[in-house]
Length: 595
Image (cartoon, rainbow, N blue to C red; front, top):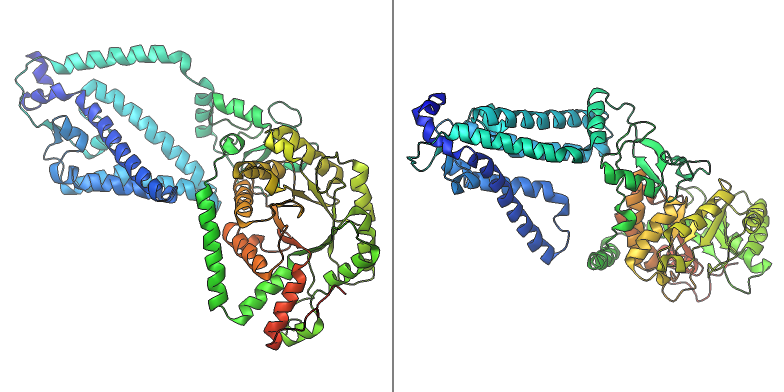
């Protein structure tokens, strides 16, 4: 019985469980996974995605519950108990608590720190977490080799706390398990390693070693990128990027979607060739888009309830503020076939002084605020000169938005001379319409180039607003994808509708577009504006869009630089409501006109 001398008589009987200790850990992981998946499935049946934001907390809670009713009470995990194992008297209550902290609490804190570090822009946290992660993984591998040699501690936690195992049943078999298991595991491990050698990603190993010894520096999130520059080249293929993607939120370099996708298939932690930053962009944007329609409509209901509550509980000052803000966000529009110089002139004068002085005086607006005006005037290219002539004589300026010549169908090619005609006449914003057939057929690359070509032509001389005509795109997924492609191509705004479609601006489609804007901002740091247009005629509509934008995009977007409402008849309704709030009585009929 030479083999007994290695561990002594008491521990000899337990050597038969040498491989079972590894199996016990696998059992524990699988049991947790089963419970976790069951909880997720039950919650999704109630409301899909309800637990997405608390998955880390849910994992910690399940682990602690299992810990309380297994290890803390019986000195054995569920997996160990199934295999006839448990810890001996070395597992004191203090060590049990430390066991839970190391196994469950530390990983939870690590995940939360990793998730939050981009929010706080902390330079040290990502490097520190990465190094700790590498050290922990190396420690696990080293412990495995030691365990295969001495058979004492199958996990790093067991080794740190000096926890020993005992068998819960007595065995009389006297085979030298220590020797037998060690030989079997070593031979099996070497055979597996030999077969796995061709599959090892040496590029990734080299990258990890390099990252460990050469930490990244100057990790300051860049807010503007070369993605909108006509001279930009893909850092991988050295050609103009097709569907460009930012390689990292910490570097300004751009790559083609397909170049980056193919490299990530070989190495999921692909580094930027220029600055060695690790990729942090989710390329599932276009290929794996899923929109939960039920949640979209639920949020619409919440917005309507919030609007109703605001109308019932808020004071008059709050309502007045919302109405004044709606004026500031307004693109005062006339896009009729019978537009003339005279009615466009009246519209422009109304944009410069949208609310009558008597209303402003009774509401005491001018005492606390700068001059009130709309954000822009939106007209056909031939009417841009009329708007510019009026503004030349006014000390208060508003933006001039011109629709592209192919408005509203989008079926014609937009020529450079057509765009320059509007800009030379005084347009500071260009509203273009996408070809809906490109979205419906999934030709995202052509859609990207169409928008990009317009952006290159107008460059920085005018703001580019891209109209998606959402009522003709078929479904929410297409709206989301079209929004992303428009932003990738350089759009400064994405706009819901032309106002000529059967289905125009609705809260659900606006929500999908705003989610795309927020996702794009999270990945690139680039703020893109949103414009709701089409069918917005009542002050209730303006209030709903402001509430939706505040909820989905945040207060940083609620200004005329990033949020607009396109309408022609809305201003009269706003002035009507302001009159009623100021004078405590309804105005006479037809008192408010564009003159």
